[in-house]
Image (cartoon, rainbow, N blue to C red; front, side, top):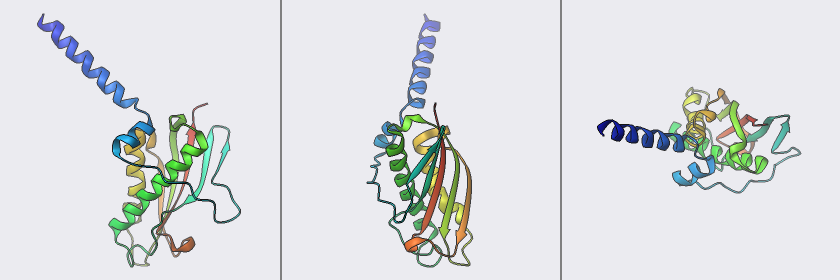
Length: 169
């Protein structure tokens, strides 16, 4: 009898773990209390995304946070700006795919930080984006990444992030 109870608890425990691992990104966003923003129109002659085969390439996007990190903004404010950019990226992915569960994996991320010349913690800023992707997409959200400082970004945005994802066939 004791063995049957232990086996029952193990099965129930594994089924709960399995359920949480298969939770859709949309459900995870809701659970975490995040709302996706409206997608803004491109500010020039380009598109927000382009799909080639099962690869989806997103144009660079940024937050409604402006200024140079290390001068006008702290590293922590830059992190939050990158996180806000992550929500915008997820909104674009949702629009492009119709269902975030179509994302097989994040492949590559380029994070650009509008930096004061003496600021060197760009990876810590772009972690705001990367941490959010893993929080929402789990292992699928992990990606290869570059985090660089730049002298200026369009409209003085704090960060700009480009993304490449692979979709299920």
